[in-house]
Length: 142
Image 1: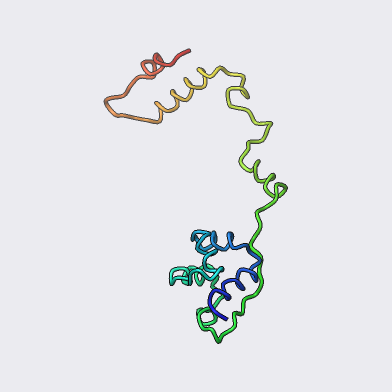
Image 2 (image 1 turned 135 degrees about the vertical axis):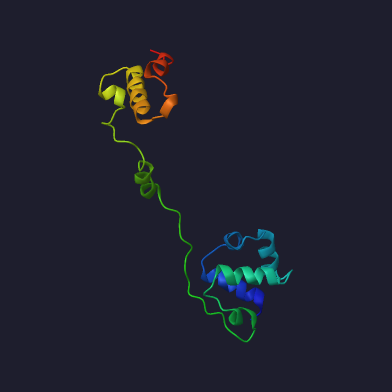
């Protein structure tokens, strides 16, 4: 069995189309088509990509004509269904009963900003160049 036949057998055992096989290897689909039709022989690059993508395939089994290709049939993983994805779409959504601080406390936004500014200016001590709270608060819109 030659290398092209072994590649065709590998594709069948993996239950893939030749296009899927080319995509997995990262090579043009036409390259696989030409290999399977016998027009071209696989390059060393293609063989290396096969061995990398399918580590269960031994280089000896793939390359030597007197060896048979022993590969277990495994399907490609399928994409998850919409039912599997849907619960994940709400993963980072906030619960509906939470509201912003201004809504919870029934306070206008400017009051909260003023409160936070007062708190931050008390925490920051700039030594001799202290800025008064009033000068900072004058610039806050009401």
